[in-house]
Image (tube, rainbow, N blue to C red):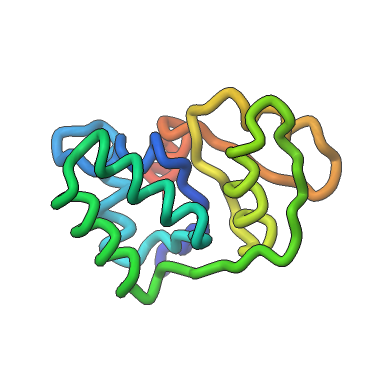
Amino acid sequence: MQDEVRRIVLDTNCLLAILPSRSPYHMVWTDFLDYKIELCVSPEILLEYEEILSQKASLQIAEIVLKILATRRNVKKIEPSWRFNMIKSDPDDNKFVDCAICGNAEFIVSNDSHFNSVKEIDFPIIAVLKIQEFVELLLRQ
């Protein structure tokens, strides 16, 4: 039986957490590279990835990661057709929610507490998992 492919939106801090080979969450990156995970991104998300990776890692790492994201068939480029404005406490995080809804993502993977507010909304239903929860889900597959 073939493993199920998970379609996710990955918060920027979680992207940073999965890249180092010694990270306990690195399997998310390797599963992505092995086409076991589809990653939904929007232009806004890619800009944030570039900005934060350049600051927190290096310009070279940012360029490599963005090139990978630009060329892989398991990256779903989403142009959100609607702004849902579901996160009031940090409106900048709404780009992840919009991408998840418009991209039909199964999960938003984030450790950011601002995403807790979307769990309280009845429709559309948005599942948010912390990175550790997502890794545990992958390990159970």
